[in-house]
Structure formats: structure tokens, C-alpha cells
Length: 71
Image 1 (cartoon, rainbow, N blue to C red):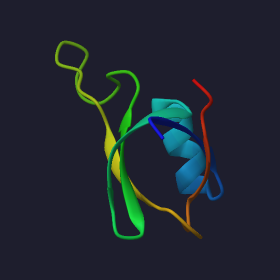
Image 2 (tube, helix red, strand yellow; image 1 turned 120 degrees about the horizontal axis):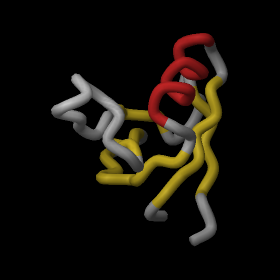
Image 3 (cartoon, one colour; image 1 turned 180 degrees about the horizontal axis):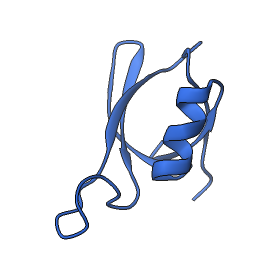
Image 4 (cartoon, one colour; image 1 turned 90 degrees about the vertical axis):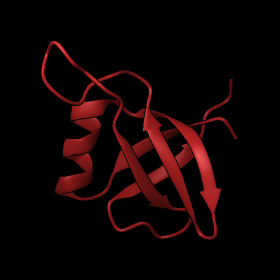
């Protein structure tokens, strides 16, 4: 699994999708969570953008549903 599609379940999740997009790269899987990185640099001031990262539960995440992306 290299990439996932996130879908927001809550207002917070939907806002993050709007901010950073729905396609994310899986950086690491640790225990019952995966560390995701945004596909594009979207975080920070215009002149110094960086990737957004977040931990998402593999099952029953409170803010996101996810599915594997067929590459």
C-alpha cells in the first residue's frame, strides 16, 4: 500500500481534505496506525510550503475513512 484516498467523516476531517487533498502517501505503518503525508506541499507560508503529515487509525479513525489507491 503506497497511497490512500482519505474521506472526511467529521468537520475536522472534511476541512483537512479541503486543505490538503484526498490523496495521501503512506510513510509508515506502526501498530494500528499509519503515518500519512500529503501528496502536495500545502502547509505554511506561500514562499515556504511543506508537506502535511498526520497519523490515521487503520480501523475506526474518528475523523477519516480511507481506501487503498490502485496505482
